[in-house]
Structure formats: structure tokens, C-alpha cells
Length: 109
Length: 112
Figure 1 (cartoon, each protein chain N blue to C red):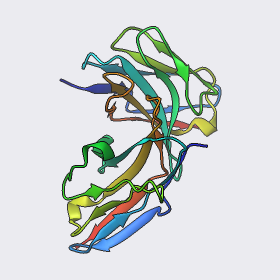
Figure 2: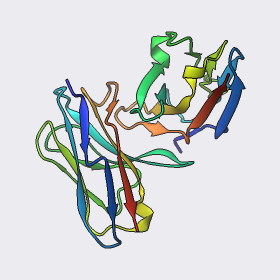
Figure 3: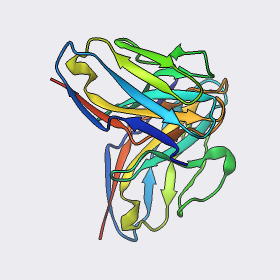
Figure 4: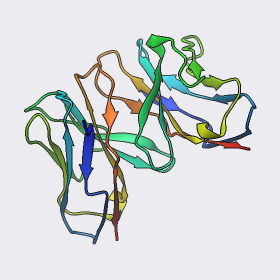
């Protein structure tokens, strides 16, 4: 079965601390993995995708096929990073995104 | 460009009432989607339209119908609303089924 799991509902860190939002997936093929972010009162937007291998707003994520994980990391969290983060998987036949349950990141001053 | 727009922003319905959620995009995208967002469950796909003239069921289609009116517009209809349909509904579009999805601002629906 295709599934995305984000084990933490809420992650609270202090400004300047490292942050890691966990994402594990279940899929037998080679999926595309994404991180979406939803800031307060804003629409959901793409943060990064694994195939682009880029760093956006200081965030990076590495696809680990052996552990079927796609954790999102940032070395020094900022208050403006506070938001809801969703990990998502797209099966290799395309189209439908499968979202995880979401993790709320709270960065305290 | 407005991107993806949704109307209404908020709606309260009584059980059994019907309503249509409207979605439009001005990016000339081929594919459009409807999701619902519930606490602790993330976003779940209700219906999608890979291209104009086609619609397909997603993960949670029961209780909903959709219409791809034209390339720009994709509506979601609740024929007989139930409290279990209380949720935030998001519309999204993408250039094609393999492209990045762009989301609308959402419609917060409460069914009492």
C-alpha cells in the first residue's frame, strides 16, 4: 500500500536550534517525494522536491531509499519557519499526490 | 495572475443541504484536483481531472460529485451534506499530471 507517515504532530524548537521533520513512506516503486508548507492563513505551497536536490529557505531533504525516508532538515531554525509541513509522495505513474498527516513546526524566540 | 481561486471562503450548511464549491485557475493548466484537509489526516484526494473532459475518483470520493466545466473551472458538489464532510477543501491545478500542483486558498465548510 502507498502511504506517507509523519510521526510527529507537533515539533517545538527554539530559534537557532536544528530541526528535523521526519517523513517515512511505503511504496514499492521509485516515487517522487515532496515537502509542502502552509504558513498561517496562507495556501499550501511547494517547498522542495527530491529530484531538484536544492535548498530552499535553508531547508534540505535527502531521499533515503534504504530507509524509505525523506526527512526535512534545517541547521538553524527561524521564527518565520513556524508552519504546517506536509510530506507527499507521487507514484511513478504520476498525477495523484499522497500526503502525510502533517507536522506543525513551532519555533520559539 | 490570480492563480487558483476558490469560492466561497467559508460556508455553514445544515445536514442534508446541498452546495457547490467553485474552483478556477488562470494558468492554462490541464489537470485539476480537489482535496479535503482534516486534523491528523493530512490532505486526501477527493476527485481529480487529468484533462478537460475527464474526471476520476480519488481516495475519498463518497458523498461528492465533480464537474470539469471547461479548462479553467472544476467544481465540487455535495448533494446531501453530512457532519462528516466538515473540513477544509482545497482545489489545486497543475500543467499536467506530472507537474507541480498549485493550491487555492481553501474553503472552510461546517456541516451542523
